Image (cartoon, rainbow, N blue to C red):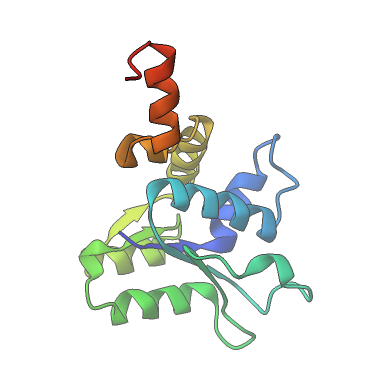
Length: 158
């Protein structure tokens, strides 16, 4: 399910907590990218305005697209338009505590998650150790030279 995230709404919720008060847009994006990677999910985060002058840390991620609403529109309007134009709105997860966006998601039968609840979910997921990848030998088997070494070690070499 793709996520549509109200960037500053989520960031303000996070910044109210003492431990992450200094988190900025780039830090939030890095955290969300890791969260989505572990979920094998995709998302879009939309911020109000034109964003910081230096946007080098805000893009180039496979699973999270970063948007700024620009100087004419606000993020809520952009998110509403994305909900409205989505061809499969029931598969969307809208992350915002804004009543306007919660209502827009409900109208299109998209899932709506309050920013506080979503952030708790992110923190819990990231606290868990990521699964370790299986060794390639598990699927491919060991090499011929390794086989010979084991045969020799157990005295099975003929």
